Image 1: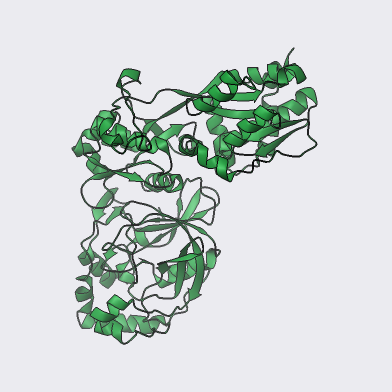
Image 2 (image 1 turned 60 degrees about the vertical axis):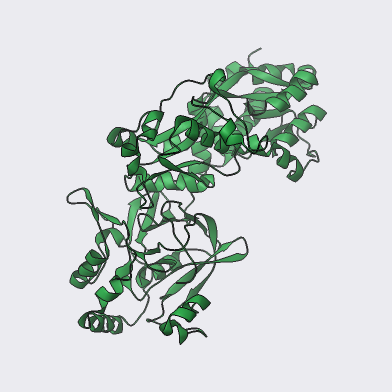
Length: 235
Length: 319
């Protein structure tokens, strides 16, 4: 049962433009090609009708997105019961289930769907939101520039915008005063929510990251669970 | 938090402020930095005021500082001294120096491995031996490698090293990946598992707010047997793991109120009061929950607690 959930803000992204681009991609059959880049993940989605956990993979994700133009209900932002000793405003990231919780008063949380990385190294622990940015510039890591011609053209930084891999907002995760280089950010590829994508930090739909950004304070505690938590450098 | 004391007693001495508290209060209570300790320190404070009109100040300080203060007379009361964790301090100050005394009443504490109710009922993980059954523990897999994970504690706790020894001795180190990470991460993982009805097994101890926050089952296991408890810690021997063997449950722990022996002359009525305080483990869980989860102010909580338990508190103070 999804509890009513009111967004505080919207990304203001040129939605029509994004959809037009998506349609063009679909026409070119590129969504599946992109999906093929997803790492094989073990995501499952809870089906409230059958009360069963069903597997959710890249093929299902692409198919679902084609049919519904949104991610499955489990990965949409919603208020859920969440009993915890953590105080409201704390972010808890469950990479295995592909959920990010923002703790709310009254033993509840807003749960957002996320896409996470699987390759590289797993990481878990406690960090904080050190700073945030709206429509952030993306600078590809040097190794990505070296191997990817598409990244090479943005070696000096890709300006923020609907095509930018960091999406509408970025939350920069710090350990003390040190930037961990991990980020929670938006994405121009919303269908990847719920999957272990081939590379990336924690990604959320642009509307969700805008909503999360509007609700958190700089300095917010972020707990990254150890299960399946694979965050890694770059995007 | 209290378990950190086990491995960090020496480190604490270096970082805490060792200067004595300067205040106008009649008595000083050392207040621990964990939740039930904050509650009990304040309940004693409120009780002393109500029963004897004594102004006591609860001052947060580390355990070593508290014992040094009890020894020197700068501190009068410590509400939670964990045994056997602090046996060495008790020997030094209570047995040898005789400057500190302990209430004979202890609150029983417990540690072991826990599961959520769903895990016990649906997945059949109820006994420590179930952890060696890879068919059962496969449900605890959270990273897709087919092998379950088990949080055994924070890296700074000596209990975590002992949980690793126990996992090796029982054999479930072969079926489970043992995880060490801060307690907040371990507990948030339990919260997230409960929120999605996913199975979860983890190292735990009581009293702890998690028992009120969620429906938690303690795994059964063979009782503590000193003859079968061979624990060598990494600080003692680099080959600690191979030299250790402990395929039995933990020994029971207790925590007691400690007070400066000088109180016997200064305030025999207070000593009588302290030695009658008989908190129950369930009450300690409620205290932790009220302060940690409900974020109640420790002093306000203590005032309510004393008001609600008025007859009992009066009984502790009777001549």
